[in-house]
Length: 212
Image (cartoon, rainbow, N blue to C red; front, side):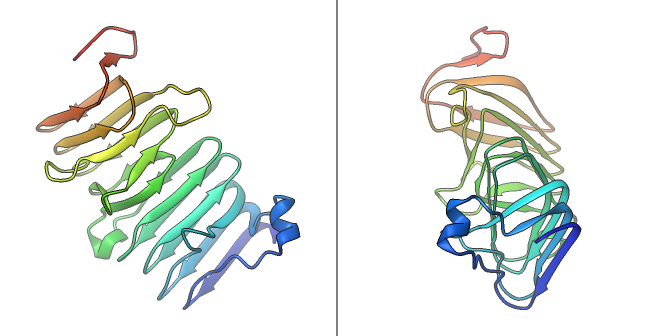
């Protein structure tokens, strides 16, 4: 579908029904300037078959369960899930935020696997043990906490096209982050209370100075 604005709403799953030929050609499920996707009682796409979008301005996506999206170009998406998690994959620049209605009105952002810039009204939390935020440049901003002492948010700053990247994180409350691969290069990390950062390699600031 190609239009200025695309709106798709259903009580059940919004599913990828493209043909193998359409998938091979890279034809998106949803294409337009702006878009709205809403599943009242189920999920958007699946982890194995996310909804592929080509939205040049802004996409709003909301579901009772998981929100599963993929974009091969730049994407700015506002995504809310009530009882699921966000699995959003972007090959280019990807920005994800949410609203105060997310997670049953808490404003929290439950993360599955995301390659993105994340901005949450409440907490940014891993929805499960394998939850991961990955990109060359990871930018996290939370009105509450990022991760928790029991479950630090897992990040991979060397997963993008360049093989290296930086971390920027700001939170009103505490920050608990774990880099899962190699070194962690820190651009800026600011919390309202405690900050705990972990990495298997060294930690440096973005200017190349060792910090830990």
